[in-house]
Image (cartoon, rainbow, N blue to C red; front, side):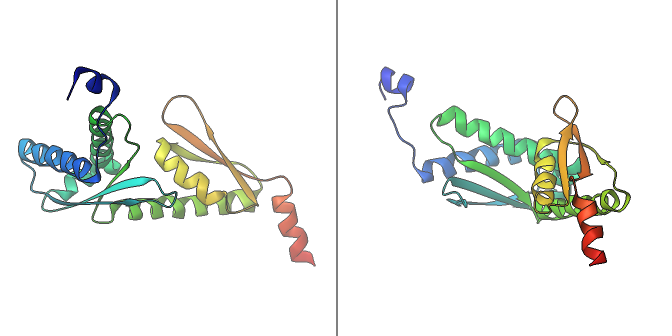
Length: 182
């Protein structure tokens, strides 16, 4: 590879190169960390047609990945994304890591709590607040609540972790009461 191709990205990567880089990085992390984990890597396009790399972990140490609200899963996901960006700057692949269905389970718990708080907001006609959450968790809640015209939600606060305010939309609670009377 010439000097200019290194500077300006003269070489295009293939899906095999991407998967190979991820596998060698994960093998090194698992070996150095002395984890008892196995993983499967798959590549496909997401709903928007963009490349997506999914890594599913399993093994004796999977509880370590799930501890503290999945912070290790999030850290590995961010690390692998940065490794890809470093080696293939033009690559826009989304990296998703999961461990034995943890992400789905975690999302469902957030949705269940959002439903409970939505019910309180509608019943009392007042705002309720969700604890401070990272952006990925807030996104799950905002997207879920966006499907109900009776309530609105917005992030409140400064920094990475923000609270979520859930409140009845203008006329939302009154519209329900009016429909009940008819």
